[in-house]
Image (cartoon, rainbow, N blue to C red; front, side):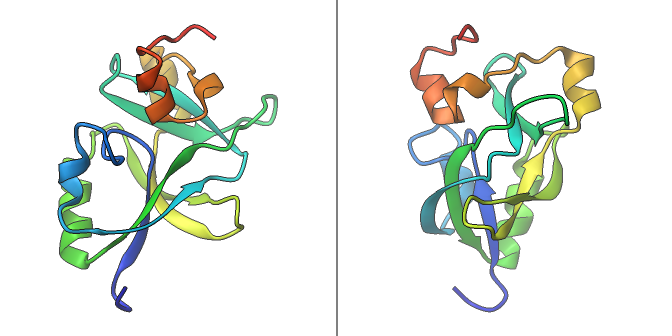
Length: 136
Protein backbone atom coordinates (compact mmCIF):
# COMPACT_ATOMS: atom_id res chain seq x y z
CA UNK A 1 0.00 0.00 0.00
CA UNK A 2 1.29 3.46 -0.86
CA UNK A 3 0.54 6.57 1.13
CA UNK A 4 -1.89 7.68 -1.62
CA UNK A 5 -3.97 4.49 -1.51
CA UNK A 6 -7.50 4.65 -0.14
CA UNK A 7 -8.78 1.80 1.99
CA UNK A 8 -12.27 0.93 0.79
CA UNK A 9 -14.88 -1.40 2.32
CA UNK A 10 -16.61 -3.54 -0.30
CA UNK A 11 -19.79 -5.33 0.75
CA UNK A 12 -21.74 -6.04 -2.43
CA UNK A 13 -21.52 -7.16 -6.01
CA UNK A 14 -17.77 -6.33 -6.21
CA UNK A 15 -16.88 -8.84 -3.47
CA UNK A 16 -14.64 -11.78 -4.36
CA UNK A 17 -16.75 -14.36 -6.17
CA UNK A 18 -19.48 -11.85 -7.08
CA UNK A 19 -20.29 -10.73 -10.65
CA UNK A 20 -18.83 -7.22 -10.43
CA UNK A 21 -15.54 -8.15 -8.75
CA UNK A 22 -13.75 -7.22 -11.99
CA UNK A 23 -14.60 -3.54 -11.34
CA UNK A 24 -11.87 -3.52 -8.70
CA UNK A 25 -9.26 -4.11 -11.41
CA UNK A 26 -5.85 -4.54 -9.85
CA UNK A 27 -6.88 -3.18 -6.43
CA UNK A 28 -5.06 -4.99 -3.65
CA UNK A 29 -7.12 -7.18 -1.30
CA UNK A 30 -6.24 -6.24 2.28
CA UNK A 31 -8.50 -8.47 4.38
CA UNK A 32 -11.97 -9.82 5.03
CA UNK A 33 -13.70 -7.56 7.53
CA UNK A 34 -16.95 -6.67 9.25
CA UNK A 35 -18.43 -3.35 10.18
CA UNK A 36 -19.25 -2.46 13.76
CA UNK A 37 -22.85 -3.52 14.54
CA UNK A 38 -24.35 -0.12 13.64
CA UNK A 39 -25.81 -0.81 10.20
CA UNK A 40 -28.74 -2.37 8.32
CA UNK A 41 -28.54 -4.13 4.95
CA UNK A 42 -31.16 -3.81 2.17
CA UNK A 43 -31.70 -5.48 -1.19
CA UNK A 44 -31.64 -2.63 -3.71
CA UNK A 45 -33.17 -3.03 -7.14
CA UNK A 46 -34.18 -6.69 -6.73
CA UNK A 47 -30.75 -8.20 -6.21
CA UNK A 48 -28.66 -5.78 -8.25
CA UNK A 49 -26.71 -4.41 -5.28
CA UNK A 50 -26.95 -3.96 -1.53
CA UNK A 51 -27.79 -0.73 0.21
CA UNK A 52 -26.31 -0.27 3.66
CA UNK A 53 -27.34 2.44 6.05
CA UNK A 54 -26.86 3.43 9.65
CA UNK A 55 -29.37 1.77 11.94
CA UNK A 56 -31.85 4.17 13.46
CA UNK A 57 -32.07 4.71 17.20
CA UNK A 58 -35.13 2.46 17.51
CA UNK A 59 -33.66 -0.58 15.73
CA UNK A 60 -30.87 -3.10 16.23
CA UNK A 61 -27.83 -2.69 13.99
CA UNK A 62 -25.79 -5.57 12.60
CA UNK A 63 -22.18 -6.12 11.62
CA UNK A 64 -22.01 -6.41 7.81
CA UNK A 65 -19.48 -8.79 6.28
CA UNK A 66 -17.27 -7.57 3.46
CA UNK A 67 -13.71 -7.01 2.28
CA UNK A 68 -11.23 -4.16 2.47
CA UNK A 69 -9.20 -3.19 -0.59
CA UNK A 70 -6.38 -0.69 -1.10
CA UNK A 71 -7.17 1.47 -4.12
CA UNK A 72 -4.91 3.88 -6.00
CA UNK A 73 -6.45 7.24 -6.92
CA UNK A 74 -7.24 5.95 -10.44
CA UNK A 75 -8.78 2.72 -9.08
CA UNK A 76 -10.80 4.71 -6.55
CA UNK A 77 -12.13 7.05 -9.27
CA UNK A 78 -13.03 4.09 -11.50
CA UNK A 79 -14.83 2.31 -8.68
CA UNK A 80 -16.85 5.41 -7.75
CA UNK A 81 -17.84 5.84 -11.41
CA UNK A 82 -19.20 2.27 -11.45
CA UNK A 83 -21.24 2.57 -8.24
CA UNK A 84 -25.04 2.77 -8.46
CA UNK A 85 -26.38 6.34 -8.46
CA UNK A 86 -28.41 5.86 -5.28
CA UNK A 87 -25.30 5.32 -3.13
CA UNK A 88 -23.15 8.05 -1.59
CA UNK A 89 -19.52 7.99 -0.54
CA UNK A 90 -19.22 7.96 3.22
CA UNK A 91 -17.38 6.09 5.95
CA UNK A 92 -18.23 3.05 8.04
CA UNK A 93 -16.93 2.05 11.43
CA UNK A 94 -15.32 -1.37 11.38
CA UNK A 95 -15.51 -3.91 14.22
CA UNK A 96 -11.83 -3.10 14.83
CA UNK A 97 -12.75 0.53 15.57
CA UNK A 98 -11.11 1.94 12.43
CA UNK A 99 -13.08 4.07 9.98
CA UNK A 100 -13.03 3.06 6.30
CA UNK A 101 -14.44 4.68 3.16
CA UNK A 102 -17.55 2.92 1.80
CA UNK A 103 -20.76 3.55 -0.06
CA UNK A 104 -23.94 4.07 1.97
CA UNK A 105 -27.53 4.59 0.97
CA UNK A 106 -29.66 7.36 2.47
CA UNK A 107 -32.63 6.13 4.52
CA UNK A 108 -34.93 8.30 2.39
CA UNK A 109 -33.86 6.46 -0.78
CA UNK A 110 -34.48 3.06 0.82
CA UNK A 111 -37.90 4.23 2.04
CA UNK A 112 -38.80 5.74 -1.35
CA UNK A 113 -38.13 2.45 -3.15
CA UNK A 114 -39.36 0.15 -0.38
CA UNK A 115 -36.18 -1.94 -0.55
CA UNK A 116 -36.48 -4.93 1.79
CA UNK A 117 -34.27 -5.29 4.83
CA UNK A 118 -32.06 -8.36 4.44
CA UNK A 119 -29.95 -7.79 7.54
CA UNK A 120 -30.72 -11.28 8.82
CA UNK A 121 -28.23 -12.61 6.23
CA UNK A 122 -25.31 -10.62 7.68
CA UNK A 123 -23.87 -9.76 4.28
CA UNK A 124 -24.49 -9.60 0.55
CA UNK A 125 -22.64 -12.82 -0.36
CA UNK A 126 -24.69 -14.77 2.19
CA UNK A 127 -27.89 -13.22 0.85
CA UNK A 128 -26.99 -14.14 -2.74
CA UNK A 129 -25.98 -17.66 -1.70
CA UNK A 130 -29.40 -18.06 -0.07
CA UNK A 131 -31.14 -17.61 -3.42
CA UNK A 132 -31.92 -13.91 -2.98
CA UNK A 133 -34.60 -14.78 -0.44
CA UNK A 134 -35.77 -11.74 1.51
CA UNK A 135 -37.65 -13.86 4.03
CA UNK A 136 -35.93 -14.56 7.35
